[in-house]
Image 1: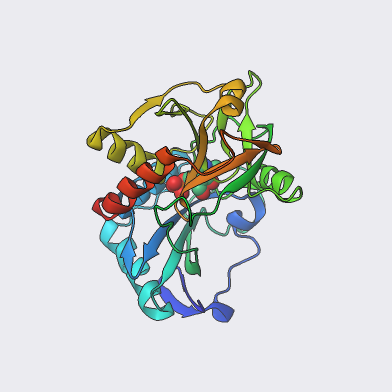
Image 2 (image 1 turned 60 degrees about the vertical axis):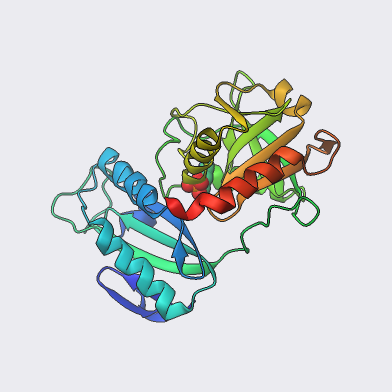
Length: 285
Ligand code: PLP
């Protein structure tokens, strides 16, 4: 994974240099994406680029590459680093100003950076083989603009570390009303009596591309009912199944929350059915 893309060219990682005055470095002032790719095939590419463009528009970064330009960068990274199970990281920061000043600078070109990293193989929809996640919980202490996929991730990093330091795979987050928001790097779901529920899109959660595709796939198929609504902490602990989703994990079944088993403590049937449907349609986006 040694060839990266910086600004307008591919180069070995060691040659990729950015200014310490880059606002991505000084302020976390940028937008990023992670697009999964398996054997050279990108998953959810168009929606990923659309979300990145939405984020840049929202924070006033004037940068309008076409979907084709982004695709060339992704394909270039895949070709140069070898296909397999890859996450393609795309990043646009507001660029390097001559001074450290909070206001958006004028006439400063954004910094574009992309690299590929290995991700786990996509889950096989077989509950006897899949890995069950153990997660911790904590109060969601991030900002009120969680729908923006900002490179300023310290809040998420600290929440992830909360679970990680206790041996957990993720951390579920709850707002001041004890309502589920998401996880530190995933969207979150409960399943009860065969119905999947996930918090609605608002400023408290990232509009996950895996979430978007999963809900669309389940609705089109129709065999599993889905709801976007407030999910309470009580519902999480009383759920038959809990899932988290992200581009590098697809759907991960959670079998334990804060040391308490979810359902019977095993990966559930609804997970298996949903992952099967997701695996069958994920390249259609
Ligand atoms: N929520 C947060 C906070 C995330 O960081 C991520 C992924 O990085 C997700 C949700 C899942 O988003 P996606 O499915 O687009 O990877």
